[in-house]
Amino acid sequence: MQKLNVHEAKTKLSAVLSEIEKKGETFIICRNGKPTAELIPYRRHSRLKYHPLLRKIKINFDPTEDMTDSEWGEIE
Image (tube, rainbow, N blue to C red; front, side, top):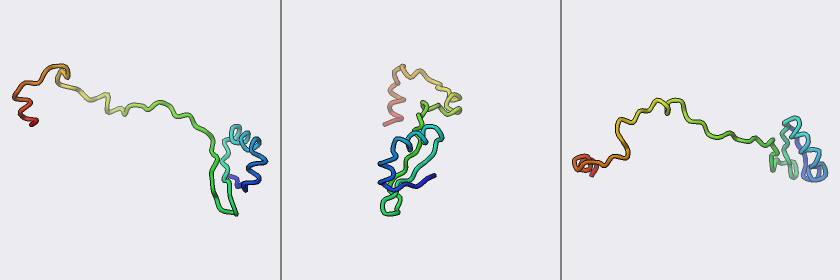
């Protein structure tokens, strides 16, 4: 992790981005010596994966089937 002041970041932005791409380096941009922003490598997120336990869930009824009056009574 390297620290740069705002002026350095502006003048060396292209080189900084190259280093982030090639080495995965992280940069902290500081203003008046205090951290202001962090430049980190972009990571493309993969699609969300289902939890393995979700595959084990069994539905014991037909969700397209109409409910009977007695079943509706239990809900109300």
